[in-house]
Amino acid sequence: MTDHAKQAQASAADPIVLIVDDDPSMRRALTNLFQSVGLKVEAFSSAAEIMEAKPPAVPSCLVLDIRLPGLSGLDLQADLAKANIHTPIIFITGHGDIPMTVRAMKSGAVDFLTKPVRDQDMLDAVQAAIERDRKRRDAEQSISGVRSRYEGLTARERDVLALVASGLMNKQVAAELGLAEITVKIYRGQIMRKMAAKSLADLVRMTDALGIPRNRGHLQT
Amino acid sequence: MTDHAKQAQASAADPIVLIVDDDPSMRRALTNLFQSVGLKVEAFSSAAEIMEAKPPAVPSCLVLDIRLPGLSGLDLQADLAKANIHTPIIFITGHGDIPMTVRAMKSGAVDFLTKPVRDQDMLDAVQAAIERDRKRRDAEQSISGVRSRYEGLTARERDVLALVASGLMNKQVAAELGLAEITVKIYRGQIMRKMAAKSLADLVRMTDALGIPRNRGHLQT
DNA sequence: GTGCGAGCTATACGTAGGTTTGGGCCGTAG
DNA sequence: CTACGGCCCAAACCTACGTATAGCTCGCAC
Image (cartoon, rainbow over all chains, first blue to last red; front, side, top):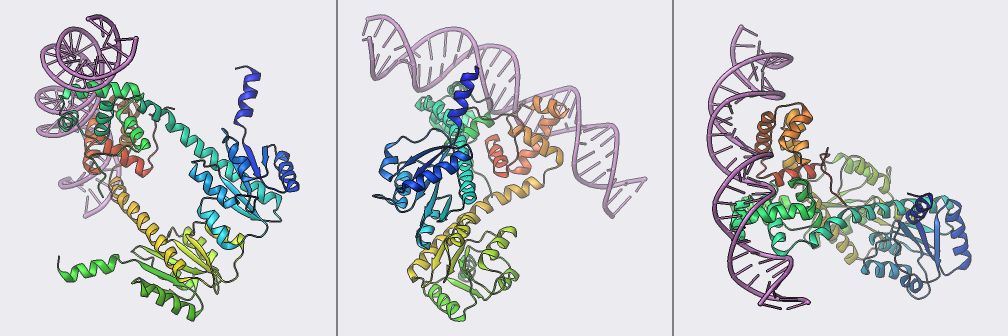
């Protein structure tokens, strides 16, 4: 890999902090703070504005004033959740109350800071938020390959997979699906190839990661 | 089962609300509230008092004033966490602030209510907390049997189990441990019996539930 | 129609998994 | 010392798994 490519990849993986605040001086102050520790920053002045931007492809977090023109911070949080965007959120507030705090935290906010915000508190919160996002993205990515391979299975292969991963023997799978045992064996081999599973244990873990329901073979108490 | 036994079992599985508040009138009011909807209640006047009591064996939750004589509600929360007691907590406060709220919620509190507390809010919170505890207990119990069976394995059997669950073939396990393949087979049979696993898929799920590390055989991206 | 892929099966053969029977060595509790 | 259990192995035998080769039907796209 060239130095240039390395650089491009490094900057692409660099975390970014998204700021939403209608107060320009606040945006400037936060931007400076984050840039001073080497974080990339993008600032918005309203909820509508950031909803139009595309979700970031790198570990990131939102720093959100709870009081915003138009949609409030809490509304934005709810909208993002509905849009299946899980960027961690840090709230800042001048005149927040406890019910508001509870609602934000219950909805998964990383932190809820009151003005005046101490720089170190903000940096700690952002650090934690980005770390959380990184973990979420890693987990997401680790199953995305498995999921796409699963999509490549035929209907019948999925039937067989579900039963094999449930712990049934080939002959039992065959009986369950009204097939000959040999047919199950052949499908099973195709499944192992298509899913790139090196062992049955692998396959079982993949199906669990995909949330494929088991027809038989539950854990005992 | 006799009617008497049924009654005894029903009452044993009935959820209970634990109240900690130094204000006797508050204790009375909460006790009445919960009993009015058929919940069992136990009331304490300090953190020290409830720490002496044994953790409840049924789904339960704590209703905790944040300001208590001696240990504060937040301290009690921390102590319970350290003692590995995960009863869900609902805080009530007269003069709480936001940082306190954030800290409590980050530490896993179910809710944080401000006085005067609306009855319905409190009942909703308790409902949610008890439901959470019930789920936690169910999950806990479902692996406790597996765990105790794992404890019954010999050291060598655990070695073999770890490698087998990693997806290695018997001969590979044997090579890894410096054994003959036949020996691995025999251990493997003993493991299946002792763990009451009906299939390899079962065994793999058990090891994952127990958090046993894999030496080989990771998922691909 | 022709080709193609999904779905299904059979025969045959080689490998992996699993049990039984029987036996060896070692440390420790009684 | 003896008994017991963990640990280790072997021969024999059976079952389950997996693949290769070959062939069938059906529906669909070109």
